[in-house]
Length: 454
Image 1: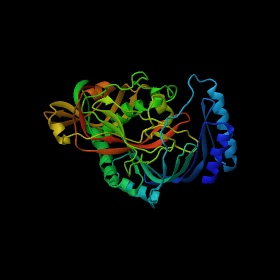
Image 2: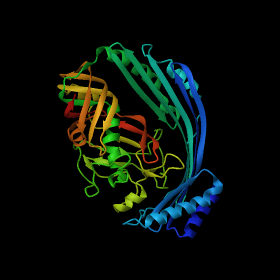
Image 3: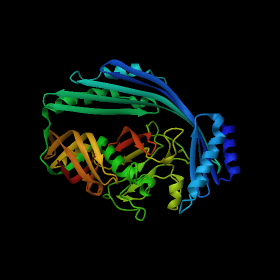
Image 4: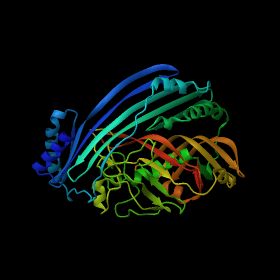
C-alpha cells in the first residue's frame, strides 16, 4: 500500500500539481441490534479505498475510489477538478506552512461479542419501560496517509459504541431517554449497566411527578451531561473555521463568529473550553489528523475569549496560522474538514453540591430530551428530561420544560464552575456528503445566572 500511495503522489506531481495527498482507509466491523430483549439484526461490513487530494492551478480537487487498480485515474480526476475549480477562484487555494507528522501507532485490539453485551445491558433495564432498544457497533479504522510535503502516518484504532433507547408510555403522556457509550477499549463501557438501570427507572418517576415549570428567569445549574451538549453546539461547531468562512453555509450552517472578528468575548472569566483529541480511551481519540498533522489540545475559549479555532491546513492558511490537527474524514471517500473531537469545559474550584447549596432560587438540569439551535449557533432551545427546582439550596419538585438561551447570555452569566468532570459520547454530523465522526463532550457542573425557562 505504501508503494501505491507513493506512486499516486509522484503521478500527481508529474501532472503539475503543487501538492498531493493520498489516504488509504479501511473501516471494518459489526453492528447488532436488540429490541425488547429480542434479536433484531446483525450485519458485518468492510468499506475502504484510496482518497486523493490535489492542489493545482489555484484549486483544490478531491476524488476517491474503492478499486486499487483505479488509483491513478483517481489522481487524474482530482487534478482535473482542482485545475477547473481554480479558474473560478478569486484567491488560490494554499496550505499552511506547517511540517506534517511522521508517525505509526496502533491501539490494542479487544474482543467482545456485541449480542452478549447488549443482552447483559438489557437485563438491567427497569421493568416499567414500555419499549427498549439497544444497538452496538464494534469496528476498526485503519489508515495510511502520505503527503507530497513529507507527511507519513499509519494508524489502527478499534472502537466500541453502544446506543440505548427507552420509551415509557402512560395515560398522561410519554417520555423518551437516549443513552450513549463508547471508546477505544472496553473500559469505556465500565459502569454503563448502572447508568442503564438508573436512567430507565427515571422515566416512570418523571412521568408521574414532573410538573411544568412556571415560565420565567432562573439561576440554572447544569450537570456535566448538559455541559456537553451546550459546549458542543454553541461553542464547538461555531468555532470550526470552515463554518466561519462560509463553506458550510448551505449545509450545516455558519457561525456567530465572523471572518473579520475572529477573537471575541462570549463568556465570563470562568469559561475555559478545550477540544483535545489526544485524551486516551475517548470516543473522539486520535493522535494525527487526516492531513497528517499532529493532534494537540486546542484552547478554544480562555477566560471567556475565543482564542483558537478548529482548523485544517487550508483554512489555517487563510488566517496566517498553522493547522492544529482538526481535519477529520469519516470514511475513505470523504474529504478531511475541520471537526471536533473531545470538546469540554475545563473544571473550576467549586464542589458540585456547593453550587446547588449556593443557589437560592433556581433549577438543576440533569439531562435533556431534545435540542434545537439556529444556523449560526446563536439561539438555542433545549428540552428538559430530568430537572428539579432549587429552593434555598435544596433540590425540590421535578420539573419539565425548555431552556431558551442565546450563546453569549449562557456563557457570560457563568459564575460557578465545578471540580467534577465527565465526558459523554456522541456522533457529530456535518458536511455534504454527510460525515458522522465519533466525538465526546462534557466537563463539570456549572451555574449560569438568570436564564429563561418556559
